[in-house]
Image (cartoon, helix red, strand yellow):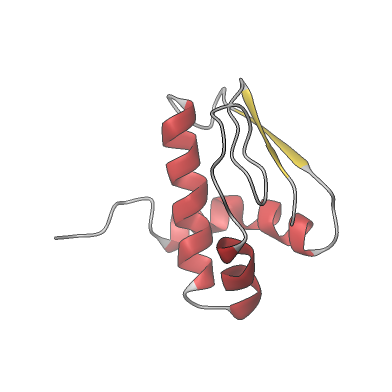
Amino acid sequence: MAPRWTYSEANATRWRHLFDDLLGGNPSVEVPLEGNGKSLCSLKVRISDALKWLGDRSEPYAQLKRALRYETPRRLHFPQFQASPALSCSPP
């Protein structure tokens, strides 16, 4: 079975700046749904696969990936996921 297209260098490059901001100490990052995914689920998959692709190649990203947890469908947080029209990401 082939991996999803979102598990790719191209997708990881698109989201890398978000993870770099979080690793650099930024407490949170807002990611609007509009223009980034068709649904909150697809946006979560894109961001999660990008982080997995980077984490499979670099330990700092792997540590950030391990901190990801899904809690409610309101916003994307590190370490929790919650959904809204925008995803808010923050490090553990």
